[in-house]
Image (cartoon, rainbow, N blue to C red; front, side, top):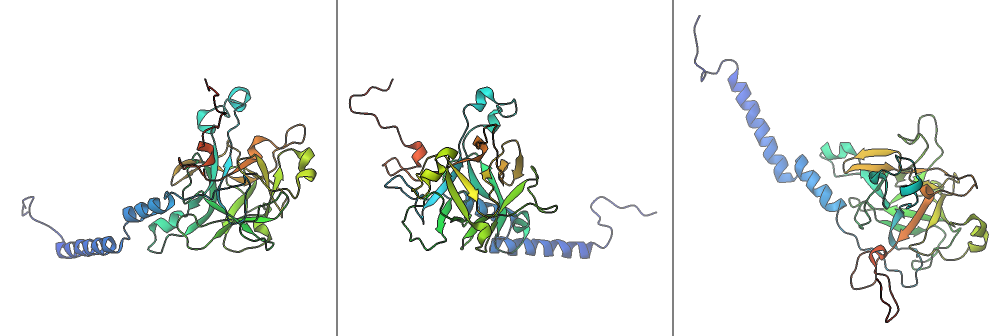
Length: 297
């Protein structure tokens, strides 16, 4: 039997070498066209995490056409009274509504597509994926204040789309429900319909009839209700989802009521606008104003 040294290639090495050259040419072509996975991920992060300028509210109210954040505020009382899971530091803090990305779009040569999925993220910085626009559905002009009990639509471009996608929900079915909680899910759609209509309601149920028709203030806790199903937008922080951006919280439509039939903090939302001061940022970062001569110790 003939013996060969290590440097001698055995087999159909011409075809193997040709295949390697084809792989190299394909790699160079994709790199020049920006289609490599690392390039697509870098472009995705650049678009989605690009800072967005929120709208300034000069009168303290929310207006049609405003670009805002939807924040589910932290419930400080849970840090002392909640269950062990609810007192977990990972579960605490302010979270904002944000969009997710379809996994298949990252590995496809097609342009990046906006996902139908949503989640709540532990970030109050206005970026492409968590900025939403207040859209009118009854002919109200841009700049008019949004009022309690008035239908409106929440639109977003997610940092990757050229057109608005709308926040929507529908009754759960045996096949269509939220993955973790198995309750009524929320999603994004390009079609404007009654499934995309929402209303803002006063936090106090005893004052809702009196407040109906009044402008909705920004940076104030409210309830956001889906018109078609009469379910409230909610973030149950016990249901976590893993996305391309890490661990986040599932967002659903469900009425969380206490023993007094009053909504719990899972249904609380604040509409956040931009700080008009020279320090920029959101209104959450605005320093508290004190009277002249007051010493804040």
